[in-house]
Amino acid sequence: MSLEVGLRHRQGAFALDLAFDSPGGLVALFGPSGSGKTTVVRAIAGLLRAEQARIVVDGQVLVDSAARVFLPPHRRRIGYVFQEPRLLPHLSVRQNLDYGGWFAPRGARVSAAEFARLVELLDIGPLLSRHPGRLSGGERQRVAIGRALLSSPQLLLMDEPLSQIDENRKNEILPYIERMRDEVRVPIVYVSHALDEVVRLAGRLVCIQDGRLLACGPTGEVLTRTDLPMFAQRADAGAVLEARVLAHDEAYALSRLACAGGELWVPRLPAPPGGTVRLWVRAQDVMLALELPQGISALNHLQGEVLALGDSGLGTVMVRLDCGGTPLLARVTRLSAERLRLRVGLRLQALIKSVSFPLAGAAAGAL
Ligand SMILES: Nc1ncnc2c1ncn2[C@@H]1O[C@H](COP(=O)(O)OP(=O)(O)OP(=O)(O)O)[C@@H](O)[C@H]1O
Image (tube, rainbow, N blue to C red):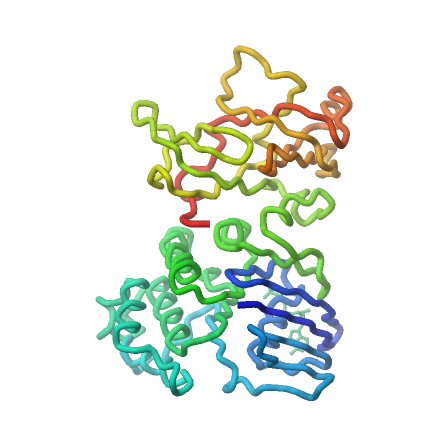
C-alpha cells in the first residue's frame, strides 16, 4: 500500500500547505495542538474538501482537484477510528460490528472465518452480546477498531484513539493495534501527541507544525534530528534502538540484545530469544567518552561517530551518533562538549546504563 497526500487549504486564520507520502505500514502524524493533523485526516476520509488536493491510496486517486476528481466518502474504502468510540448505544457489540460490515463493498465483505479471526485478534468474543454502555473505555475502543476493519478498508485512519484512555488501558490496547499493523496488515494513518505511542507503533513519522510539513521519514531518523527543537529540546528526547534478543540471564534479571552496533544488557524483557524489540534510549542516559573507561558500572558501550550537533536547550548540546548503524542521541553540557572537542566525524564511546532502559512497556513486538 502506498499513500500520497498533497493539500492546500484555508480554514479561518489557519492555512494548511503540505505534502507527504508513505510506503505503507503505520504512519504517524505528529505535531502540536492545532497544527492541522485532524484536518489532514478529514481530507483523506473525504469529510473535508480541500481547496487544492491530491490524495492517492494504493494507486487509486481519491482526490485530484486539478483534474476535478473527488470521490465522496462512502466510495472511499477508509475506516475511521475517532478519539471516543462512536458505537451505537442501542445495538449489541455484535450488531455494531455487523454495522461496520454494511460499508464493505460487495465482493469485499469479510467471511465468517475472517470475522471470527478479527474477533479473536481483538479479544472481543466475550463482549459480543453486551451493549456499549456496559463496556470499559478500552473495550469500547477495541470494538470500534473491529467495526472499522469490518468495512474492509484499504486504509485505517486513527485520530488519537488512545487519548481518552488511561495509561494502563492504553498499554492493553497498544498490542492490538500492533496486531492490526502486522497481522491484518491494514495500512494505518495514526494521529497522536504521545511520543511513546509513536515510537512503539510508527515505522514512518510525519511531523506537522502550523499547517506545514516539518519532517517526514523513518521514525528513528526523524526523532534523532538535532535540528528539530520539537524533539531535540524535549526532556525525554531519545532514539529508537532496534535489537534482537540473544538470551536472558534469569539470575541477574537481565536480557542480552544484539543491535547493529554491538551487544547490550538491559533489564529482563518479556520477548523470547530470537524476537525483535524496539527500545527507547533517552539522550540524557547516554554518556560520551573519548576512550573506553575502565572500572565503571555502566554495562553497555557502543562505538560511535558524531553525525550532527544541535542546541538541546538550557545550555546543553544534543549529539547525534551513528553506532555501526544504530542511531543514538546523547545530551551533554556545553562544557563537556568543549572539553571533548565534539565535532562531526569524531569517533567516541557511548556508554548506557542498563537500568536506564525503560522496563517491559517499551518493548514492542515485531518491528
Ligand atoms: N471548521 C473550522 N473553521 C475554522 N478553523 C478551523 C476549523 N476546524 C479547525 N480549525 C482550525 O484549524 C487548525 C488545525 O486544526 P486541527 O484540528 O486540524 O489541528 P490538530 O493538529 O488536529 O489539533 P489537536 O491536536 O488539538 O486535535 C486549528 O487552528 C483550528 O483552530
